[in-house]
Image 1 (cartoon, one colour):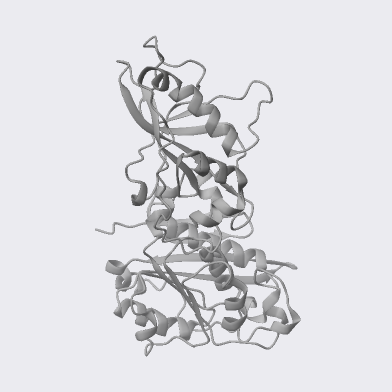
Image 2: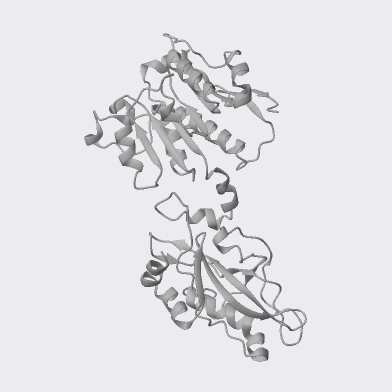
Length: 397
């Protein structure tokens, strides 16, 4: 990746050729070996960190005038902090490959003439002159050490760079799900949206299961385009071709999951159950609980009332230690309801998507990505008033 970025971005190439200690990590440009003076006018070395914005897989740009700095407050020859650097104390999470770069503050200094840097070369040169100028004058220091870290270890599952995660400074939060192996059982309406959301979540692996075919009505209740060549194919095949260029670690299998499928779920750390058949759900629940896999089950109960559709969406979380007790509450139907209007395949993609949202948000709460104020295991959402009408707490200890 280092050589690709250097060869496709002239400003990065110029930084390397001038001798800057260039590296890349967490969608950031790292420039080590930046000399500066501390409060006692002693020479110290820090690092400049600047966020990258990827135009495509290899072309990058910078879109603001700010940087991060791993080091103390730079001082001038007079022993005072260098003025006009702006910013303040902050942190930024990088990977273990850059464990030596501990961001402590940000700086903000616009070029006076234009108010905007043209590229990374101009940006780094400007900040180095400000930060390192006093150290260069007093100690004859140099930031041009020609130290290069050509490869930074990356375990990203995405085939494109997740630029906005680094820009939003939530890399540490996203890493909380990086070891998860997710099973999505059922790729119908809600399952397809759950798959779409999880594909864009940096979990280690996603396994999806559905034995049905992709028909026209499927397209009306699932994300993405309708390609006529997909009609009549297995759902697993269609969705795999749709997402395989987005990330690694995705396996979609045309298979009906029942109590005999232990091998298919071996190693799974969390499951989403998205089926509309009660008897199928019963077998899946038995399999997951026997394997001590925590899971979320989603469902809808819809009916036509006074010429309009009404009903509820349900999201039920079954933690490992309480799964059996929750099963006894019969919160999710494990028998079929022939009168459920959902069975008629009405086009309700917005409800499918919303139900998937509830499930994925709850999973991310459980992993600590989202704040969880009230830990609950059962949630019902009323369509008529758009309110969560039930939320019961539980103690997982």
